[in-house]
Length: 223
Image (cartoon, rainbow, N blue to C red; front, side, top):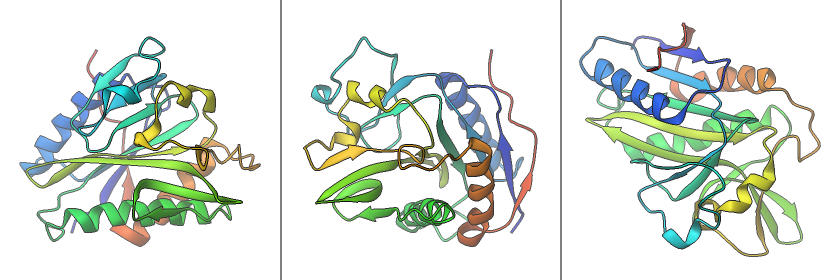
């Protein structure tokens, strides 16, 4: 199997432009014109609504732009300080097992967090990766939402490095509310971690789960 390309965008990428670029790359992967791709980026502040999003979970509809998206899941915030990893893999060549792919994203995220001595874990009744804060409280540190087109994946995960956590107050993140659940980040946990540190950890651990990677130029985005 060919190596997976690894691309990083230094400047924030508009959401619609990112989706258009992903869809073009997915088509090229499916047609055999391009290699599989992991694309790391940040977005300007915005909310996305997955296929299971409930209208009542958008608490502040005028706060940031809201994008309806075909990925799975509910409402999610994206913004500066959050590392978004869009993962475009050909499951036709990887066993055609979507559940295993999602478990792989969870494992990859947990391994990345472990590089910073953070224990992040999935929960059987809740989407994403969670950190036990003690006293029965758990905070979400990463969101996961995927879409598949003709067995090629896109969208992926969003890991909170140092976003403005107050921005999550405009939604019920992933539909999970209550006093025992919140949102955190690496910096919120007391770790002065840079985006470059996180990128290095993501790249180091990705191969442990999905296979080899190679650097490449960032994909072109419309506009």
